[in-house]
Length: 366
Length: 244
Figure 1: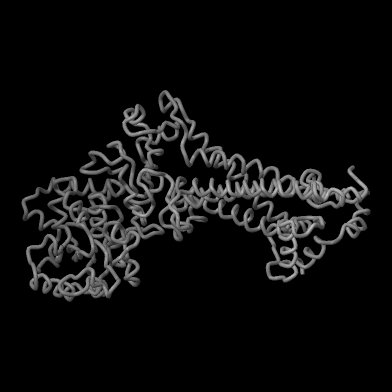
Figure 2: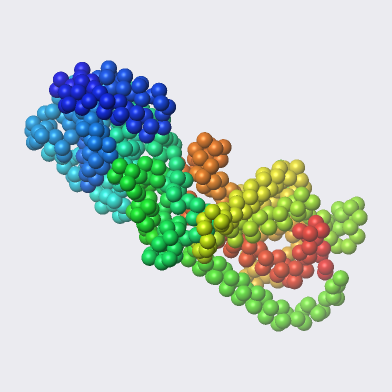
């Protein structure tokens, strides 16, 4: 636990990484954060002089896909450095210690870095039945989360679980799983949604916090603006087909082979804020739309509860029926149309039967 | 005060209308109801809604595939452009309409200001429902909207259009970017529905509410023209005749 005074640079040099590789990493990170060319040297300077940010990484109800993504950061160097860049003092999934030893480390880190550590939370706590659906170290996870959040500097809510709730919070949400911001109210929370988030987004965010010692600018929903300010749609390479009105009608039709827009196949790109179409996945190899499948909107609130992944229109369940807006609207218009027709018919009949009444009055047409 | 005037005068009997209107030079049994800005707005608004409904439906469902290169086509782009342009026309018109409600005659404010708190208003709504339910036969003598129509206008038109303008600009702000004025002014919508897909859905449902409104509106206007012998031309000439 002597990492508090160590810098990233000293750690990676000890691991045999060259200074040249280190600077390449700094330039790459500066570029991915959208910073100017001078920022690369700022980052290098910070990583050489600033002590590593202590990070405590908790796991609640989750599938570990965020961790899986994180350790697969594209550039080989990132994988090596990230685990060195931050002083990852506690992460029960990838740390060597286990059992009571692990819990002892957690308490120790909490006391040692009081008010200085970043609490990274992967997954979320279930709240029903006193949180008994997620027991971690003999206690409900929600208690651990609350006590660790108390002394933290800031919280990173990794993934859609921690940000929005994700699959365990999907209807009917039997365990009462709730996103972090519904449990912790008094700490800055950075939401990094995605199922999982893109590796470079995760590493870029950590680099930013380490380098500048502050949190990045967040949008209205608490997501870092640098990665979540545009929709998949805004930077999609198939956007020109959307504007042209060229859509895939069926999987494997001629249009699909030509790589037309997947809008009609239910692509959620136009409603999804994420960096997939800019950064892509697995080291910039591809992303869902490039592979011929629509976006599922995995980084958006409640994406499990919006009906089919292959429909543009959300299924509406509020009226006790599972229909989309068009079906409900057409039904309503049909009912009203029939009512109007029936009313007109009754009016006509009434008018005819009341004829003697009306002819008694002098006609003043015109 | 203002509302009371509006209510009292809107329901005045034709005789009183006649007396008031001889000064305007309208000799026959009629009344000057809708002033020019309201009439102009009505038709511009109707045209904008027609355009918005058609293009909106196409945007929601997509168009049949265009052949050729993407660089040679811009069909969907033009449909969206038409939708956004009509949206601007509707919004600017709506703002001017609110202004005309403030400075115009009493009928101009009817669709914005409904005296829901007044007992006599609900009594008249009840009478009107009886009339539409064929339980009462006396013809409608309202100069402007009758109370039931006023209520329907307020609930189905005014509120829906306000909702459509707000959600429409919020969705537009997504494309325009987070530093656009649309997002700054209307982005709070996404604090209510964090996933903009929900906003799309509600915006889409709004189209159908407007469509249902249009059905009822056109039917009621034609029916009133025949049954109560009140001319529908009041939205063209501004004058409402009582032909009996």
